[in-house]
Length: 103
Image (cartoon, rainbow, N blue to C red; front, side, top):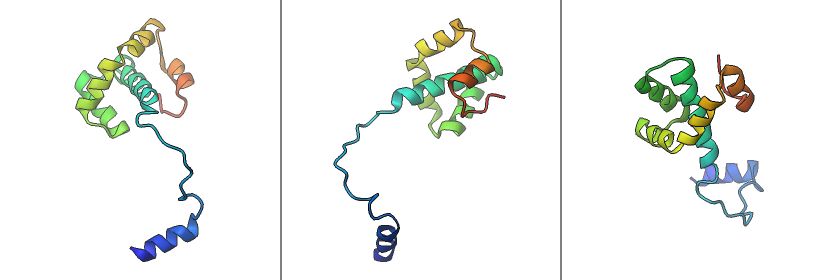
């Protein structure tokens, strides 16, 4: 334990000091939920996967349980409705979230 601590302090001495910044729980939850909504829309509406299969794919992508993903999808209904209204396709989604594979 001590050897590991010494090694880390040698490599990253300033990174581990307390900067005084407090982190709020859930700061990125909204962004994550939007990404999940977009990926669900892609798998379900564009690719045509069944609901259960789309949840399984999102489980792999986001490391969340299928139950939690289903809850997020219900919370993100507004995002899904907006994607449907905008007639989002792969190109639209790639422009919004370019770091995902939309092909």
